[in-house]
Image 1 (cartoon, rainbow, N blue to C red):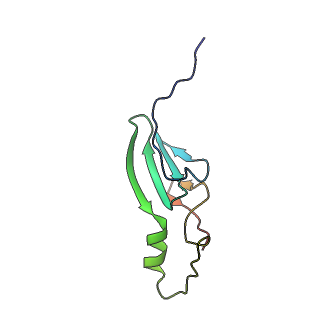
Image 2 (cartoon, helix red, strand yellow):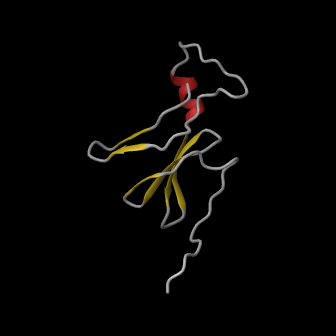
Length: 94
């Protein structure tokens, strides 16, 4: 009988925001501290990560972004993968 064992553990402040999207050994997750993370779960290493809050604020400066203690431009959803066109989509609360 096979049993489960922990292979890899990465922690983020407050945790992960939604289930990951997975493609070709990479898990794409949103975190509660405002990042999208690409994790190679076989090697247990972060391939890349992006700070969603900084990206939204930087790229949409002309827009007025209301920021309070509970409303910041972060991703809290599972990313979606368009494998054919090599695009990763994510949503924000802004």
